[in-house]
Amino acid sequence: MKILVAGKGGVGKTTTSALLAHILAEEGYNILALDTDSIPNLAQSLGVPYERALGIVPLSRNEELAQERTGARPGEGWGVLFSLTPKVDDLAEKYGISIKPNLKLVVIGSIEQSKEGCLCPSIALARAFLMHVLFSERDIVIVDSEAGAEVFGRGLAEKFDAMLCVAEPTLKSMVIAKKLIEMGRQLNISNIFLVINKVQDSLKASKLYARVFSDSTPYHLVSFDENVTMIENEGKGVDCIPKDSLIYRDVDALARKILGIKKRSKVV
Image 1 (cartoon, rainbow, N blue to C red):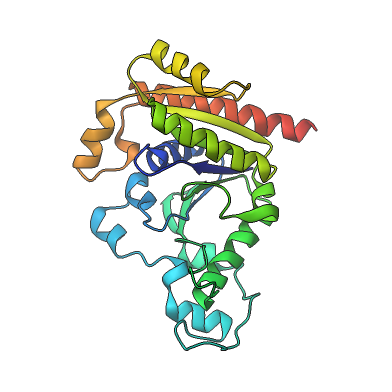
Image 2: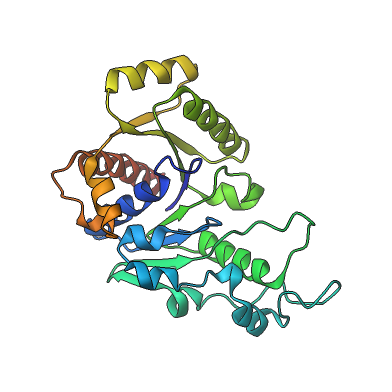
C-alpha cells in the first residue's frame, strides 16, 4: 500500500507521517518512509538524533551517487548524456536509515526539475528510485511530500492507494487543502482524506469543513497536543509521544481507517 501525505508547510504533515509510520510499524507491518520534501525533516520526526539528521544527504543531492549510477556528475554542463534508467533496486538497503527493525527511512529530497527545465542526473536518480518503489510490492510506503500531488504527475500519482491532505482548522488552510485535493483527484488517486490537524474545538472545525467542502470528501480530526511542541523542542521523535495522548489516539484512529482500505483492496 502506498500513502501520499500532502499539505502546505507548517500544517503538521511531517509529524502526521512520522506518527502514522510508527503506529503502523507497531501493528507489525513493514514500513518504508520516504521524504520527498525540498527541505526534508522527516528523519528527526521519526526519532533520528538531530546531529545525525543534519548529516543526511538526500538522493536528489548526492552527486557522487548520481555519477556512479547515471554516468554523469551534476553540473557538468548542458548536453551531457546520462542514464535515465539507473540501477536503484539496492538504494533502500544501502541508503535507508533503520528506525526500528520493520521501519526504514529513505530521504529522497525534491524530485522536481529545475525552473529551467533541466533534468539533472541527481534528480533522474531520485525519480527512478521513487518509481521503483511505487511500482514494487511492499507492505506500506508512506511518502511525506511537498505541497500538492502534481509533482508526481500522472502515472506515478496513480500508484498511490491513498492521499492524506493535512490542513489546519483555519479558512485559509482549508481552502488550500481543497485545491490540493482537487489535484489529487485529477491524478486519479483513489482514496483521499482531509486530515484537519491541531484541532482545539471539534465542532468549529467540523462547521468550517462544511463551509469549504460541499462534496463528500472524508475528513478526520486530529487534536492539538502540547506533547508535539514538547518533543520537538527537545529534539526528540514522535516515538516519544505518550500512547495515551490526544494526538496518538487520533492518528491511531486514522491508521485504522487506512488499514481498512488496505484490507478492502486485498478483497477486491
